[in-house]
Image (tube, rainbow, N blue to C red; front, side, top):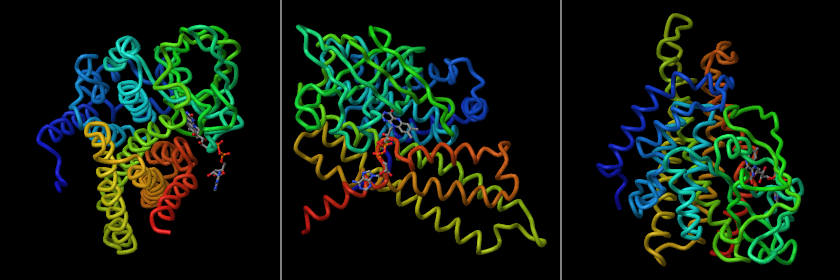
Length: 404
Ligand SMILES: Cc1cc2nc3c(=O)[nH]c(=O)nc-3n(C[C@H](O)[C@H](O)[C@H](O)COP(=O)(O)OP(=O)(O)OC[C@H]3O[C@@H](n4cnc5c(N)ncnc54)[C@H](O)[C@@H]3O)c2cc1C
């Protein structure tokens, strides 16, 4: 048992921290206020690629710099550092989707030809990659997906609609795409689903729209409509009919890095809170000298630290699952990752609100960065990558199955 980071992981963490403090902190408010042409400046994505963040789940032969068997542990380190400085969560979410559903998922499930086409563009920070599951009539109930992919010779023809998808614009403006869950068999069954890698800029018959979110303003959320859109067969991920199951596997990876984003942002809020309560005085002494405040901060620190440990365990389990087949099962991973995805956004929303309250009236202004963090983390409380109730459903199912 080892709770520490390796020397290489510590160097990586320090490199990402130094890069983000110097380059990301100064522009995080501008990202949230949508001041850049493509929401996130190109040079930031290039800079993060140069220090190996985009490549941390991609093997060297495809342009990445993955440490085999430690991919998600490295992703966890990077995403926590990025969201500590970009608390609106736009850049961290852009990164975690591209690293998770792009680098990690495509590395495991894409055909060789497709890996060679896509992975180098992800490792260099040129392309965005995301996940395209939710539909107007199918959110938590993933098996109810109806977007149809009908086989015609060596291609699939798509008809249907996807909704609330992160990176709808980015996948077109920058290039890239989404792992997309489609119905290829009996409707409303798990066995009737398949996953396709879809690159919107190569697609006919597709239109898209963008919604007005309340947070994460530096990353678009929107919908796609497909009308006879043709996708070559080579873009099938894994086996036909296994899409539901590999999608659930992908969710475990994505939920781990989502938790990392929430914990990094929360760390940033807690650091701001501590700095402020030490210097703000009321009734002749620093407000942090009141136990009403210092005890709450102590409790919040404990919640954050325990969440971080649990996440480290989850990431380690995922890495073991892929690098040492048979050592860990998805069933063992499910409740640990569900716990992380439920808990990290929840304490993030709580702790960012506490920090806002210590700042008094200033905490309610847009000049104070805490509101960005609060709005950003709420996207994961509401349910991006799975709602709190669905996470509890996974945990409860596991407890009852194992013990009842
Ligand atoms: C900012 C943002 C970005 C997103 N990005 C993406 C993306 O990139 N790709 C993608 O595919 N999707 C994305 N989503 C969609 C997200 O995955 C869905 O919102 C989520 O899965 C919930 O689906 P729904 O909104 O249809 O809610 P519903 O499934 O309709 O659920 C509504 C409520 O009912 C509860 N509920 C449902 N079933 C049960 C049950 N059995 N027991 C108890 N309670 C239940 C839920 O917990 C929730 O509170 C995003 C969402 C947001 C907010």
